[in-house]
Amino acid sequence: MLDDIEAGPPDPMYTLKKWADGDTCDQKADLGVGIYRNEAGVYQEMDCIKQAKVELSKQSLGHDYEVTTGNPEFLHHAARLIFGQDCSRLASNHVASVQTISGTGANHLAVLLLAKCIVPQPKVFIGTPSWGNYKPMLDLVGLSTVEYSHYDEIERTLDFPSILAAIASAPRQSVFIFQSCCHNPTGADPSPEQWHELAMALRAGDHIPLFDSAYQGLGRGLDEDSFAVRLFAKLGFSMIVCQSFSKNFGLYGERCGALHVLCGTAEAASATHDRLRCLIRWEFSSSPAYGSRLVNIIQSSAYLKQMWATELSAMRHRLYKLRQQLHNLLSKVLKTPGHWGHIIEECGLFSWVT
Image (cartoon, rainbow, N blue to C red; front, side):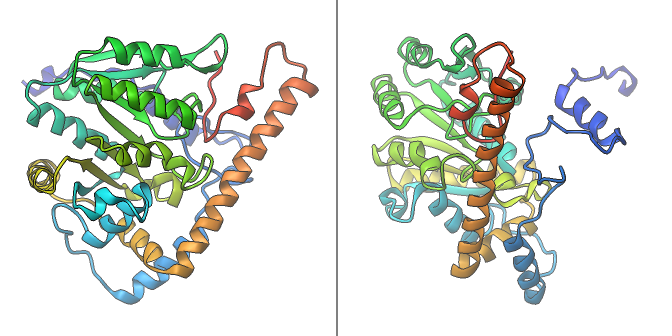
């Protein structure tokens, strides 16, 4: 029976990663997995992480399991980082927060919650091109998906009319997956004014936004990159927010993330938190502790928190400088046919050219 198991479908990212790791050329450039690399093309550990590791070693916390739903202090800091320190929804206990296996785990847990606990099951709308894991995750839990155009490949910009049209045509109480900043893989995000317009359109259809925040701080700034999430929270939306600390803390392999579900009442948030506890317990029991402890140490220290913000700002400005250099190379040095202005209009780690 076990000999009859079929191989899984190919994954281009898995294949590219294997090829890149096995390439011994000292001039190779890994353009597969979305990782911030330094001028030498290798992983760069942040100085604030180095100091947090020293502090963590002094605490001698050992390697015991965390509680099923995650470290409460870490979740406190995580929620305020994405929603803002003065978010009234947090103060009113309308947010159910749990720790996850990075942003991927947060997205999986979110769609599992939708599949198992929302009746009738909602349709989930995904803009394309987008992160390649969304649809397989949704297929895995049995949710039906609808794809629409997120990006205009002719104009090389956000396809805003297509997004509005998809919202207008969707069945009531559908779910729309949005990336809050630094869109993967296009780098094309809505403007603040467009986010306002999207909010009004979603409210008209009583739709639920699911925000995926994997790059906060690497686009326009920590507050700017959470604009959409904070706007929708202020407007009173029920919504889901997936949060990753892989990129903005450089904790890729530590799998550190959080899931936040905003509800209409504190009672609903409490029930949702308990349901998430069950789903976590039944699937993976608890999340890794090491990365979240490092984030917690940094966010609990004014000195380390400022060091982190400064380092993140330097990374963000370097990314923009690289975009300017690429734009100059293509348009002025090589005089490559085409229009390349979109490269410096986008933000984050990605750009889309076909």
